[in-house]
Image (cartoon, protein in one colour):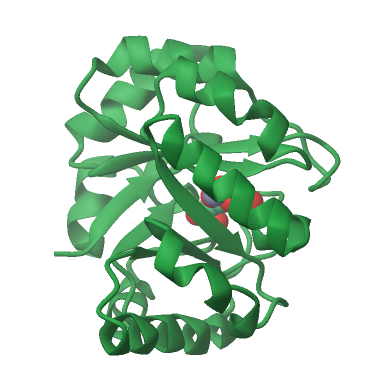
Length: 217
Ligand code: DX5
Ligand code: ZN
């Protein structure tokens, strides 16, 4: 079944530990941690210290996926590994082939899963060289930087292409979608081939989070 990963970006930051637990108690499969540096995107969120606090709050067995929207994932990823996240994803738009490939390898070597994110305006071809070397492909369905934006259905085509590529090449990476997802478009995303749906506003800001997650599933 499709997995749901609530994004902590939409949580009440004054009670971050409780909010992280609330997501899992409400049926979340993963918890999505949006890391923004004010350079790669025009917003600043939180860093490794908060991720470590979240890990402490939810215990050792919950899956935490860190989405780095920062300019130097190669320089910072280790701090997120130490903070206890399970997967580290960064953007394909950041560098040349050597930089992307090397950073992907280093993340795996550090003992966590790796992921590559692709912005709405970036074509599918940009990620193809790496599809055999990743654990997760994150197809952005909004321009990264802020929660609460509208879903861009045009990216579904990229999800379909990724799912086809995966079947053809018998690859095993997961396909994740992120941005503007809720009960009205979750099925579309899953039918296109997405395995993990990130949802911030539609989960944390729902009157009943458990119900919101159940409805999406
Ligand atoms: C956008 C982030 C998303 C965002 C999702 O830059 O990567 O994870 O928080 O939030 P909603 O579901 O509100 O679009
Ligand atoms: Zn995200």
